[in-house]
Length: 589
Ligand code: PEP
Ligand code: MG
Image (cartoon, rainbow, N blue to C red; front, side, top):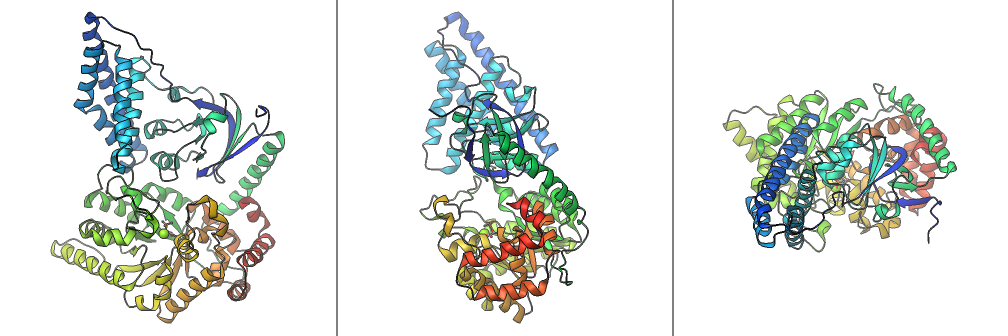
């Protein structure tokens, strides 16, 4: 039996950074108790009327939430609730409940629950990923109808009195959207991944969150003190005074370091010996531009457009996409915005575009492969990107390129998009810069063949590492082999930089390595021209670069290429960071 007073550290996946602590608010899935009872024939009309009223109320609430989300965030997030509305508007579902009610003569709550369970079990058992996802929508909507039947106009979550950390098995998107950031310090769930609807919402609301904790909701009791570290993906139950003190110290130190670094917002990332490197930002949604501007990025180095397609039951059409890209381009102008064409597949499943389940999704029908096989989808996206390029600050790049033919093929479709827009008299940047992402060793080794077809390379180290070292980037068991400083990775990066230099084009890095204050200096030393990272990491990387000498980085990077071990290289750059900027080093470890 576990000691109920002991501190326990649970590890999940951090979704939104930030450290918070407070009492746990355990959200039980059975927050509406359903008692089954038999009803008389005479009671049937009243039960049906109650049900119809609850359905109407639910529809109103969903519309309201949708409008609120659209206002607070954008249409993309709001469209998540389209699927919920489809459930309340599904007459066959409503009729089935009414038919069961008449036949079985039981109260509407119990009938609704059993019909909904049957529906969601049937959906959950289907092969089609999109339909499987709808099972969650049915459950979410049912919970809402049950609450309305019980006369609870708003959920427990809407009525929180004191600030708390929500612990739940899972949170539905509609629940996450209604969280009051003043009362909800953070949340932790057993299920979920960083690309789930809920995680996207949490990020958009800037609520510290950890998902994928497996059994947190079973281990935590109502009111237990908990500490949540959204950066490290930790939930600490009953933190000891030492842990609280430790985190308290970290928080205070972080605040003052952050404040100092934020003051560098308008100063360049320039080494002590005068070498400048542009620091750009990675974004997933147009709303992320706020953070980009706040942290003083030089531009956007990676716009992961597939997130616009996520969490929707219908792919955004050309106009919707153009609006999203234009909004970003307009807000960033004259700073540049590199829009990556959608990178679906791998670990990113999109409900609106049906992709088959695969045995090796990372080696399968992903990114540019998917786009080239669906030229209509690709052409639509390229037209939308071109339409946003009228400000002359948009560039486009293709993900997961494995050979030059793919670049040529993609460029051909881009030319077709240009031709169409020209005929239609639409303004766009005819000279839009095109780049190839270097994420696969074959692309790195044949970079020289691509220089005629692109104006820049952008190295996606997240994938380059997994494909070079044959280490699945999402498999926890082999993370020890996922080594960014492996000499093979450094040699590939250096090779790409050399080829690009020889041909007068630039090399960016937009993988996680670029946002790591210990490893970004190594990339600078290897000769990379631009770094792109999550916006909140920019001040840290900038502060680190401003504490170092370019000449030292060049020498250390050259030595690293001849080093025998990844850990030795990592140690050297760790020591350098620790020595040059001990305060920054402390807050990242
Ligand atoms: C990468 O692979 O490094 C990259 C930036 O792309 P993503 O993480 O979206 O696969
Ligand atoms: Mg990638």
